[in-house]
Length: 255
Image (cartoon, rainbow, N blue to C red; front, side, top):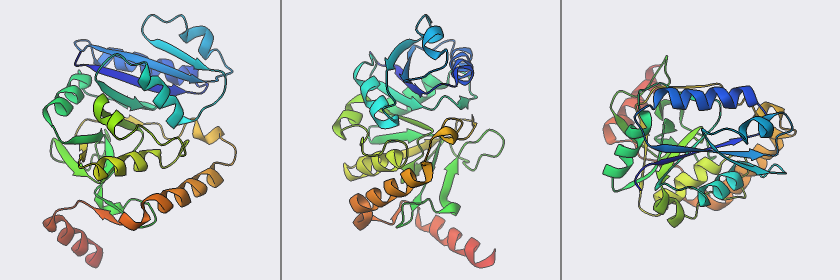
């Protein structure tokens, strides 16, 4: 059936998760969808509360598998043909935005990875080129059109057709919490698809869970090194138009 399976990985932060779920339900009264919460071994009351919820499909691991493995495992159990992977601290502010995502992906045959934040250019070190960042943040959007072609989509919100997700072999589980989004975006590009950012307003309460991860800087550094080993020969990646490249150059010259 053509609809959306929303997959949310969680580790504790029950209050944030409940707020996220309620926000999705509030803004999507006319949409057909499912919410799958993958619990990465929470030790608070997440299991007690969410395992009894009628609004979601609750899946639990007794250990923290990381984002990529949690996403891949949940995707195998999804029942709809469009997958939406989002953090529990992302809140989207458009009525029936699920239908907007479904409609865009269904009507755009070459759509690979679709999201709400990304960049037209990625540097050789795997970082975003600042002037090319495209997003629809609620209070300060940089996007003007209904959608923009980008090189890479940020992992705070990622959507794709299930058959495309399977074709590019899902998330690379080597990247547990960092660079998984850039890696899957690159594999979409390598397979001939285009990645997009949509003009749908959202709010992100940044890294509410990652702040508690021990040794996160080391994990990020190791992930960056591995990402460059895999994709270094193809970077930098830039999908900016000629007009945009000239504009970026002028902005850099006269700033």
